[in-house]
Image 1 (tube, rainbow, N blue to C red):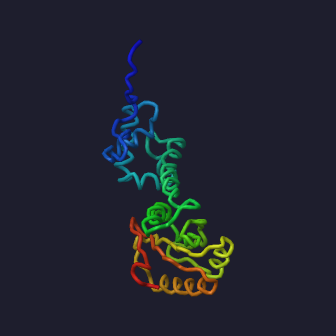
Image 2 (cartoon, one colour):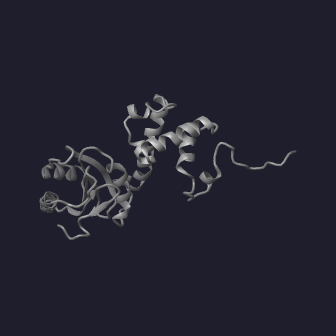
Image 3 (cartoon, rainbow, N blue to C red):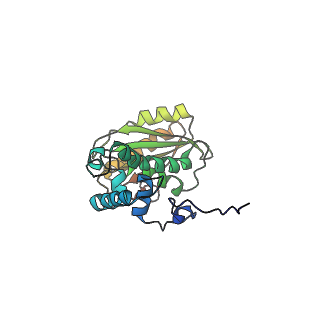
Length: 224
């Protein structure tokens, strides 16, 4: 009987099988998704072209499908695979905000908020509703705006907090410009929401502003 040598399949790079390793080159990682059964020179060439054309994996997975399919070797199926990578990563990070998870520090929610909001082309205003032990009850996208503004209705936030039987709330919204610095209007609406929530004995814990890879905590800056 021949010994069972547990070797990784040739199509799966050893660097990917090493937990915690981030040494796999972007080109090699893309090649794996473009040709999962067996790496090929053609898939490697397509991956190289993608990186040359778009500049980064982030730019690739947030590109318009029509722009991806202009690349020779990228059809509708491969475009869908590439665009699904961002959603997979967001859902992985969303596990940190699944109901029942305890929020112990700003970092517990910042990674997910950055992944979900940083590349949205319009402002999205969100809320994380928590119980009295800071365990997640729900995450909701409440208001959708334009490229530089969102109309926020404090009464709707109160209604959702009561519906969720929340004891605390964390707010978040993105700045599509990429600049995460809180504006005067951000500070004003945050104070209005805080004051309104206090009327129903719900605490506002924080308001995060998400920019291009940056997440600013207004609570940490003492802005409300």
